[in-house]
Length: 324
Image (cartoon, rainbow, N blue to C red; front, side):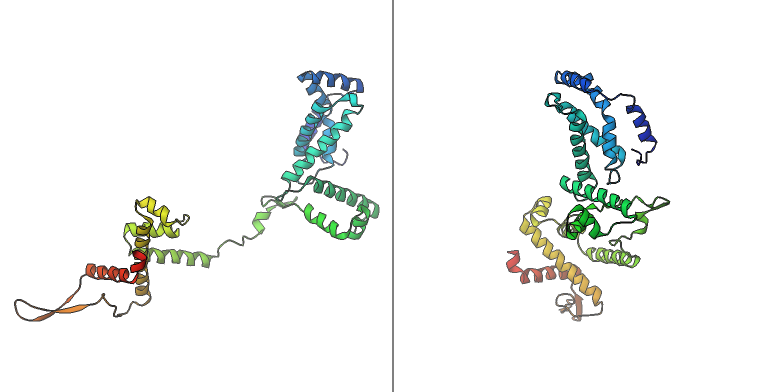
């Protein structure tokens, strides 16, 4: 464990587990027999006596995406499984048997947690081998090995090596510092491509203001229907059936009210785009009316309510089949 850079927490942990002496072969056999009978103290003793093995194995998987303490914790889970399944009558040593369980537990944790995209355990094994070979070659050559040298040493072609290297890349946290000597985090220097520019924000705000002005021509029920059908309130657009249930009417009635509201909005939009005088049937209709008192001819403009009634009547005529 000489190459392991240990922080204070790991040093304390090593000091604690070092207080339990290693077991002899006879002690392993005795404890295993007691464990089979359900002796919890024997199980705890055997686990404590082999915790140093977990640390040694966990060191081999350091810098793979999980902190060393997390690797040790996962390895301890594998050790517990090994202790429960160990059978000394088969002739093997606990350390040999437990090493397999410890490695499997650590590799599975790495596959599950160190990647955004989950890696199969066999890929973790291959990546681990690639890194070990690369370290050995670096020491022998005094430099980083080329892809060709590394592929030849492992016994694979360069295409497979490239695949392993791609799979070995780990995503960096946006909260992580960009270097050990810099407190600047990745999130501070990486732009958000989805972020809106000030001009886009202003345009978005103006669009909402214009939409609110248009919707002002609708009554409260019509506005609620348009909001619900088109998701203008920030919610997911609803079906005619869903809106009908909210208002206690049929889906066809909601369709009619929606079409009437849309017709109002179209007329309001046309008026905004072309505010000048424009003769439209039913909007500026005048008729001559004989005065019953002086016999004079006067002009009377239809009231706003009469115009709206005629407008809706026009709409019903145009959409007679849809509203039937």
